[in-house]
Length: 604
Image (cartoon, one colour):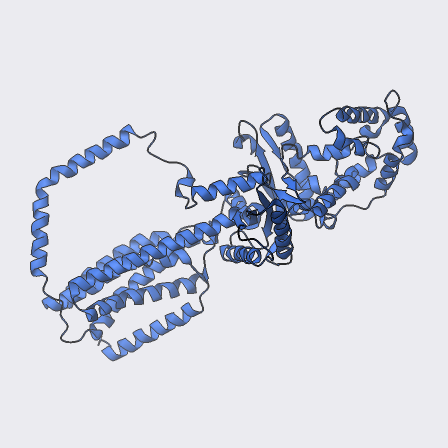
């Protein structure tokens, strides 16, 4: 078959490169974690992906304001909260203001008979009511007596306390000047929940920049105040930026070193530029191939373009040497073809990976190397001027050969080093290996310490353990939450776990609300039971008319819906556990380890 004229080959190459550039110009480059999640995850892996995507932990930003006076920090906290609350990038922003706290307290108190897990027919019989009131009176003598006393006339059975008991072990944030503050009072703290997925680090980065810009624009802010932030989203963005910076730095250093080495050897800028033509062509082809196959290109995929420099540059070196030596092109091409085939075999393993990001790396490397080899074989010879020759490196090569021949006499050092390395591995086999993933984390110690401080300031608990399941609709999700609640309550009483949160604690299912409503006695029975219940107690029935009125209202109360939690911190907590998805609901129930730690096998 007659070969194509060189002009046509160059025209086809130029057209292919222009097409690749056109594809790249329309390519969406991403940096989120979704590319490194399994394509077909297991149940546990899917739970992790769901939590990273939709869970509040991955979308929560912990914000601290330091410096200045306590009054200024409180003012800045309120101003920043007001600004962020109007920004659609944030689903919710809370700073512990009195209005929000009051809304939460009013929600629990006004709806206590639908929310309390203690509401049963027996509890509101004469004997049950007597015991409940006696327990409430006993509580008055405790440390919380002053806080409980105002509840007694309207809640003598202590349903509000039973609701609070569900969150036992939680440490509420400290409040000063009407906002949340750190334990030492030297920092105002607030938390914001991002609207975007926890896997979208680009959107998270934009939201974090918005927080910084909003804080910088606050009026009457003294120079001594500063903003600090942490949380999973902050650490994710910081990790992404660190990794991208390292990749860019190493790629730049590697490119500069290769260029300098080639320029030292070639002593010709023209040959240097020609030698980089296969590399650039391969990189453009690789990016375009990934874009067409996946619809986007991950930022880390570009970083691995440095692998092309180390191999594709060799192709042009072989070509220049072949032309300088006058050797037949067939020998040169067989060498390159063998190198390309071995590389394809190696990178092909990545194509079958269950992680899309690794599949991208495999496709990028294979298509880039194939393109670089074809450009070296068919395009580069037509670009080399007739008089261009690689300078004679015979003397330099002979010198290197003598050095290596001299080193061969010290072969015994290699054997000794191998024996010593083996001995070190055997002796330190118990301490040599680090099994903690934190060793691979780019997060600095200072960032980790700040995260712990802010979580402690906001009463954060251990978030390593989560019970998760899905349901087709909200009612099914709440019913299932109540069933899981019963199991986890037994584990909590047995101290297998330290506690937990469930969405049904904040919003019971309609069926549970109906059951609790029907457990309340009618007005006549309630009055008779109350008269009997207070006999022998230092409390008269006529002081509890408000209690009877609230029972009457609760029996006629409409069912609670998500709208009842609007504007409350509890609503934010509910949204973090009851997550709407296109195909139903995802339920995440955080577990708090016991003093001995959570036992995952028992939790399963």
